[in-house]
Length: 215
Image 1 (cartoon, rainbow, N blue to C red):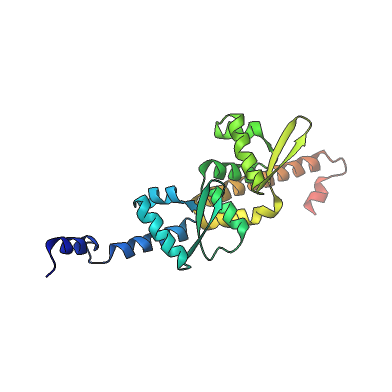
Image 2: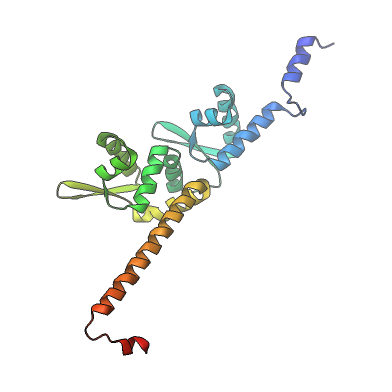
């Protein structure tokens, strides 16, 4: 006959609806990885709210069963859905999970060929801090630098832009929507400026006449 301790263990393994807690935790972690690819263990523990040991245990089970995958990038092991096939996206997603790197990448989409000083002013960080982040992005093959006399300018590699944009849109939709809105406004401003410039050129052209305009 089972004693009270056995019954307590059985009850503790169930949630208020009578479902297995361990299985629920595994499902929560699986869904988290699907929605937040590129996250590392400590970030997952913080966001999901499980103990470190429990999180690691379930992640190991999910990976061994082929439901998720992981790879070490820099100092951390990052976790991904198996649907993400290319290594470039894995690296990009890892950097997008870091707030400072993400902000710098979005800034460089809007302001290619920016100097270290401009990026430092944007983030309100010291130049050495920005230099450290940029060196990591360059080492990962995401960004590039070009020296112009005494000035170093930074940009995102052309071959990376499409993948960066698609991953921003898929996994950071609020960031993407804000960026797209700002780019649209910039495009409209350029169109308006271009139209105004064309009108000024027409008015200054000695061969331009009102009759030609009416034609």
